[in-house]
Image (cartoon, rainbow, N blue to C red; front, side, top):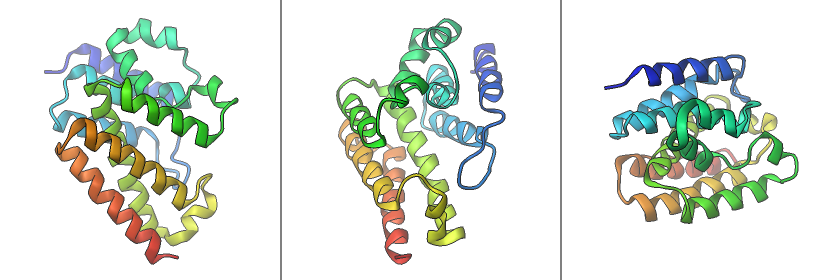
Amino acid sequence: MLSPRFEEALAYAARRHGAQVRHNTGTPYVSHLLATCAIVLEEGGGETAAIGALLHDVLEDQPTGRGALREAFGDDVYRIVHDCTDADATERRGLTWWERKREHLGRMSTEAGAESLLVIAADKVCSLQSLVDDLHRFGPALFDRSARTAAELLWNYREVLAILEGRLGERPVVVRLRRLVTEFAVAVDAHR
């Protein structure tokens, strides 16, 4: 069962991300948060993980203080969001994309708990499914508007997958991510 705490997180996520759109398509960003949350719930994640899924990008993408997030949703949710965050809005100014991703991969390997890893896996499945769909829809021109190349994105997804395989095993969400990484690699090769 989901409590009023989940409703609060849903409203909080909608308020924080309401004006945000996905950069390649203009789709309301909240769709990604809802899809990530749905995957977590379908994988058997509890309310805390589901709330973490709804809020997993709030530190990266919105001007949200870590203390305020912890106060609003508690230490357990805060920990999941922290584990999902490569760098918050302030930290991003001083780091390159490569630095952020490598540091985040290191934390995933050693520090992230099982609930955090489930949210990370659900996030990557959701993001990569959208990316594969967009690549089929728009072709390689999709990357003309992207800050990252297909090769860079593929590298990151493969690295995350390797960590998740080692830490979560053959959970359905990991199997799904593996299929999507392969599909993305094939689609990128086909569009070269």
